[in-house]
Picture 1 (cartoon, rainbow, N blue to C red):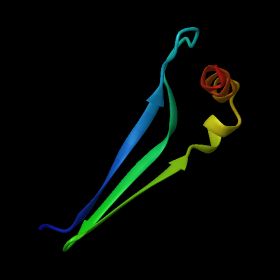
Picture 2 (picture 1 turned 45 degrees about the horizontal axis):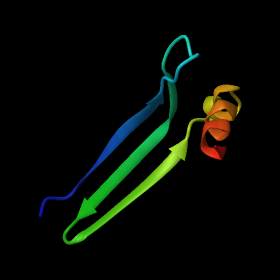
Picture 3 (picture 1 turned 180 degrees about the horizontal axis):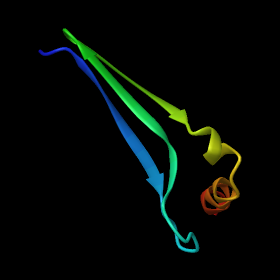
Amino acid sequence: MAQGKFDISVYAHWRGMPEAKMIGVLVAHYAKRKKDVSFEYDKGWIKSEQQLMAAAFMDG
């Protein structure tokens, strides 16, 4: 298996949002027979009002 790393930018664009906003980056690493993924929130997303909308949708 090949070795490598790739980043996937994750965006939200829910109803009521004028444009898509970056939530964070999903990072995938793979080497030999091991795979690992991690996610890091964008600091701007954490401070935004849109992330509060996401929590409201998840509550029900």
